Image 1 (cartoon, helix red, strand yellow):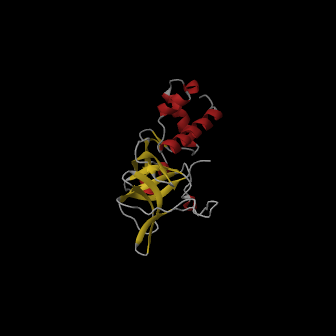
Image 2: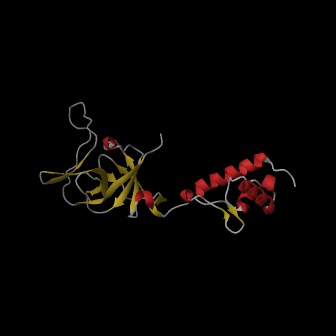
Length: 212
């Protein structure tokens, strides 16, 4: 029997592990064959021979009926499709709940099983809560809030803003989280005291930071 090519053995092992990390499952022998077609050609049996050698060395778990096993910690858990629906200005309210830009699968184990949307933050009025321009705010859809919650509120019909829901002395207002002052000493980012009809779209319960 021909000796094993150690470089191909290592490459096959690396490929299996990377595939598992990215996909939450193991590649098939055919996937490996196509990935290293220059070496394996169209021989599934040759791929199997190398995988069996990796098994013999204790580097992978493999059964002829089960295929290559995947560690339970790498298996994909339950997810919920979540829509990215544009930008939400963290400052002066602006129309935000408009165009759907994409759909993303959020893991239930991390984000919960409630309905969510994703909004991209814009502006600097929430930086003291760690929300910077370009960050993704994961918003749990609900029409109520508790004092101190970061809410997405619709003001003046269809304008949306991210602010801290605040109750003080019987009054409710939307507080900015940036204490910066203008040259005249007034707040650069004003709190919002809604007039007329307004409603809460949801609560920001997670923030995904934008890569620098």
